[in-house]
Image (tube, rainbow, N blue to C red; front, side):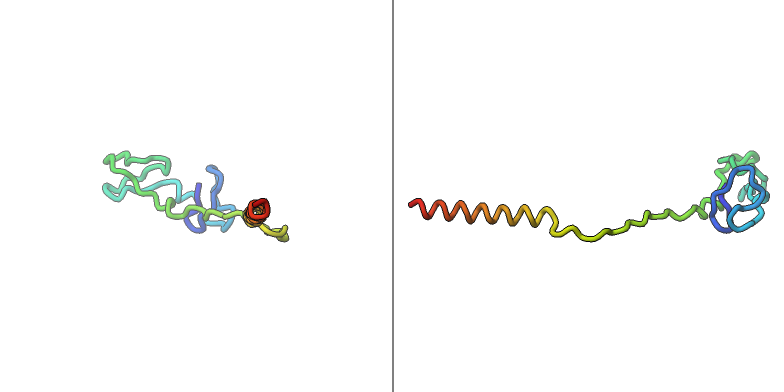
Length: 102
């Protein structure tokens, strides 16, 4: 169950949030905005009128945490630059051999 106060994910049987201590027992039901019937949080549709239930806890999803990437020391030039330099050297060598053999 997601805590409506802090957004922390808790085990389904938890009575209080493991992060902020908020009471989760009141979060186990959803009141239908159409007819006022109390429904279990697991219901998608109202038991009284069949209307699609809006769950307020959906707005409190945990933030997606991006993994921290530790950048190590640079190992010199990227491979693209090295290949470009090698290609330029080979082109210059080919031109040198072409003009000297004439």
